[in-house]
Length: 154
Image (tube, rainbow, N blue to C red; front, side):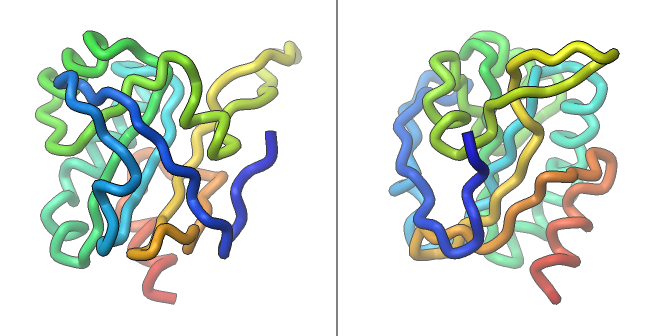
């Protein structure tokens, strides 16, 4: 699956979040959206990335961004993750990989010389009209908010 590119229309989605609420791309019309894909809740890299976004949440909100995290974890696992780390944004339970595949965030990875399919840590910034404005394929998990803000200011 190919990543979306800058200028592409972001695919719509309708997926349950950690609280069982149906969330869609249309819910964010008129605001910028950071949608970040992470492989697995409550693992070191995914926790670092999510907590960094949490720690900078107010700053990102003040700059007009909403945030949505997406992983293949179940709604229950997403809820535990959100509660454990006080994550104030939607975490989508993309168990059917509908969103990950539509956004090109599912594909082949390599670890220890073995190739396998999995979620590709990726972040998209989507503008107020639903158009991809920025793509991050190399995510700095411990300082992702600064990475996003710096790129958006350039």
